[in-house]
Image 1: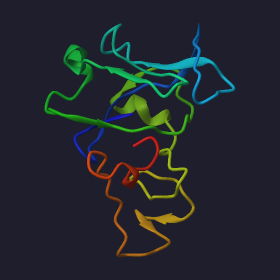
Image 2 (image 1 turned 180 degrees about the vertical axis):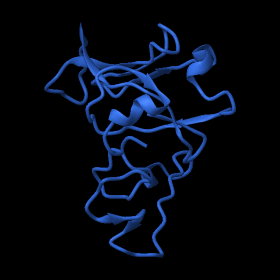
Image 3 (image 1 turned 90 degrees about the horizontal axis):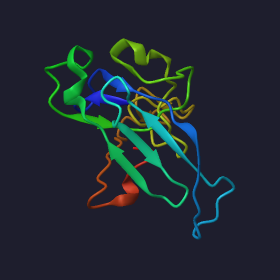
Length: 146
């Protein structure tokens, strides 16, 4: 799911679907040797995110080709991984309502987390807690999928 800026409206989204292409990895071993791909066909045929079993992530998204599908006032996007929900193909704007909640397996209370330990972005009702991801300087301050 791509949002307009930080915390903005959903701009576009796509589910990850298992590809038919087998890949191999030596470290770490995986039960599944296939990549998953989220295609943003509404934007362009080349717009996609690919996750490989060896940890490789490829992001190629061109929101400028979306025309009327993407909010023209949105000049930057942020993305994170959400639970599958009922979405079966890429969508834009309100069409993304079929995605699940934000993937938050470590209960860090991300903005759209569905963790039972989070209430309005607070971890265990701790009003002093604030989720703050700083991947560049503190990699492990970020939740998986953020």
